[in-house]
Image 1 (tube, protein in one colour):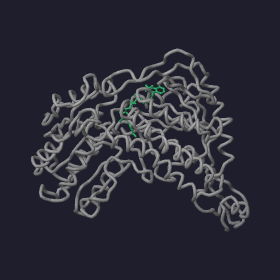
Image 2 (tube, protein in one colour):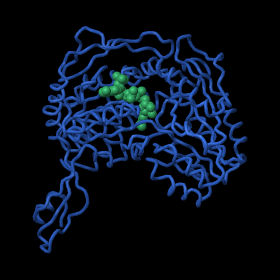
Image 3 (tube, helix red, strand yellow):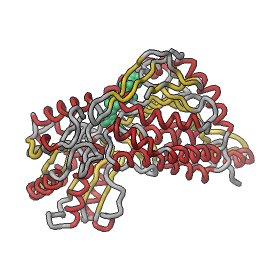
Image 4 (cartoon, rainbow, N blue to C red):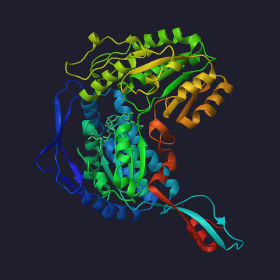
Length: 515
Ligand code: NAP
């Protein structure tokens, strides 16, 4: 396949080669990324002037209809994405489900929210305020869409969902999108954008794709644009400190590295149902997408009295994970997505091993796949003295690698969890209400999401790592300081809040309700 950029309403290919993409299953070449000579500044201006003005003419309900059409088009082509995901990402059926169906589901969810917003062209925030003694003088807060372009710079690990979760919110907001997927996993993102363009769902300029490169995007950024980034903390810092990002005061949302945790409560022992739910969730999170999930569990906290039991139960589960080509019989764990990711996972595990003991490693001799694939078997580490350790609280190995950490009491536990420096998610398994509420009050300020599981929801919860569109996704500090999704909350990033002070009749019209 030859992948090209879509800018200024045209597919761009100047005949040169920008990059290559590879098959994760055997390292063979899978496609080429065409170089592009289009002017990025002009492309972004085209998106603002053509795409932005056309989208703002539509109501939220009408833009919801566009989302519905996108979901329908993607549904019709999902077998194609599944094949690309299998080859380029080494995805199992479940991995593809999370990326492709998860992405389409998020688009559908935002389409359904649009119905509630109706035929309006702005959102309101709160009730009318009386500002002076004159009851006829009121203030209302309006949220109107930005007049710039939504720049979406995405990570390699969710080429489908990672793109669509941003598209759903920006498009419903009425802001055109310039999408820059990670180069190594372009195939799924490219195929989806191509299908959306070919189906002629969106007005010209509403969607643009940067395939490869994109290093000059921020040179053309303005204060009416917004940049939503997912990727490493290092890149986030480089982008946020771009001179134009600073001089133009550009909105920037970052979803970065996160040393997420899962906690076995002090009330649960090895015989309890809660213990079994915890072990099930941790082992699942370590192996789904071969651990290449920003929300995956990296630190596993257990009461010191349960350490041995938790270690043996986890090892028994991980030993059943079979690495290899996901289409082969019995394989449950695909490869990492690229040679670079495999190198990074080896380096990260080696760094962790400097401080932790390796207590389990999957048998690399039993990998059922072609030589040359980017296979990496699960590793379980033990950090016996987490209060004295530092690397385990700072190192995210983006693969099927996690560390067990015993704790001695609640206060020590919460302190250790917070040493992650701000995380996307922590899950807490406990039937003790007092402990569960303490976990919320002690950990909420350092987490974007907390999953508190007791026996009553052990079978019905949505999972530690699954990002549900109605819930906030993001986290403070190391996790990037961003916030995405969360239902209608996510739209705020693409809107400007303005206080309009006027007479009561006009305030009532703007608010859409009688005062
Ligand atoms: P990365 O190397 O930081 O790259 C992320 C994206 O930024 C890619 O599209 C990359 O493009 C682009 N990029 C890099 N430098 C750029 C520049 N100067 N200008 C414009 N774009 C630039 O991260 P990654 O390796 O793809 O992702 C792995 C990391 O993402 C992990 O650490 C993980 O924790 C994090 N992550 C976080 C979340 C979350 O929701 N919080 C989700 C997934 C992943 P190229 O591919 O072309 O280099």
